[in-house]
Length: 258
Ligand code: HXC
Image (tube, rainbow, N blue to C red):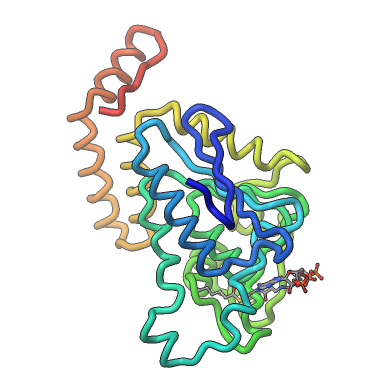
């Protein structure tokens, strides 16, 4: 399958790497690009050989937002009737872990794309922001929600109301990203993390992702109940028997994802 706006490769066993590839437009996320991203992530999700996905951009930009030139003339009735950009949320239905490897600008929809991923790693030159306010609009793909969950109300308000960007260190210290890595190594690091995840049992990995994500939807009581139920279900898997037997026998487990 050939795509026009993304590149797809397998940099390591069990890892799909998706590179956003509109460098001249700083990877502005036009509608077609996101459709391609949905196709590629869905394909990886359904491929038993894939354990985790990495999404990256280039040195200068992860993505500088939704494509402003594409949306500037849109009318309200069309936006509403067509559920404009509604297809972006499909990424949040992917069951396998997705790691964002961010260098350069992650702005607007680019920051929201990163926040839809499960883990964010960043280069020292990464910049995160929600500059939609400068365009007379507001974030439309989770920025007011996921950013607030990630960095808290005051910082989210400051970013969303001023459009100011924050750097990689600040993004790490506020919990927006998991860590800053050495310059030039963000894709390698992300692939390493994805490889490691890929070596685990896929049923447990999927349950773990479901569990953590439930923390954003459920009360503590309901969330821990859901977690315990998921935990119980894993005793029905061969991977649990193998994982615990391997520990007791002092050997490495071989997971079969069953
Ligand atoms: C379309 C974009 C773009 C975007 C950059 N470009 N961002 N095109 N949509 N979001 C294009 C520029 O028009 C230019 O094209 C080329 O990429 C290089 O960009 P420059 O501006 O020349 O680069 P630079 O001077 O280095 O400035 C970088 C920048 C700036 C600070 C990131 O490009 C910028 O402010 N971009 C817009 C950021 C933004 O507002 N994002 C939020 C979008 S709204 P030409 O043809 O001139 O070379 C959004 C809503 C999400 O995301 C809703 C989701 C549902």
